[in-house]
Amino acid sequence: MSKSRWILDPAYGEVQFKVKYLMISNVIGRFRRFDLTVETDDKDFSTSKVVFSADVDSVETDDHQRDGHLKSPDFFDVNAYPHILFEGGSIVFSGDEGTLDGMLTIRDITRPITIKVEFGGFNRDSLGKLRAGFSFIGKINRKDFGLAWNTILKDGGVMVGNEVRISGEIQLIRQ
Image (cartoon, rainbow, N blue to C red):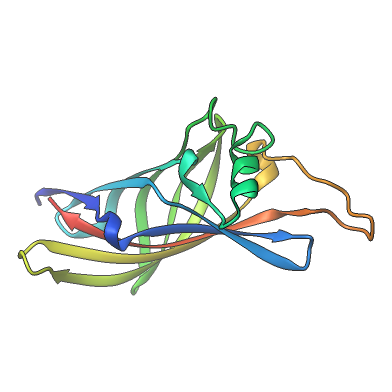
């Protein structure tokens, strides 16, 4: 079986997160710049090696002031820790759905996480390049990664929830 290297098509990729704000609704954020490479045996993603990196300075929540706070030492501390990294192994599939175990690093703190993956299939683009599509979801506790800033609200509760839901859509191109 031949080795294949797959790279992200950034025009068809998104990585976003949701976290409770004021404990009544979610703030949705995204990373505008990220990279993903996958090595497989041919088209077999159950034998993959996954490497993901997000540029923390590209975090965006549609609120300039909040984005600045997220980049500050209270949260991601972009000057000290400019990237979020994920390295994972084989995707264990049951039909088109699977799980990907790996190690997530935020602020130089590395923890294991499991991501649910849905395989969208293969197809060739207009240039004849083979593509593969995936959706994914996962969740982390932000405090596990040193993202502990919060404020107690006057009416009870906290400003920012601890659970962060991660999701995305990607297209990979075989090289």
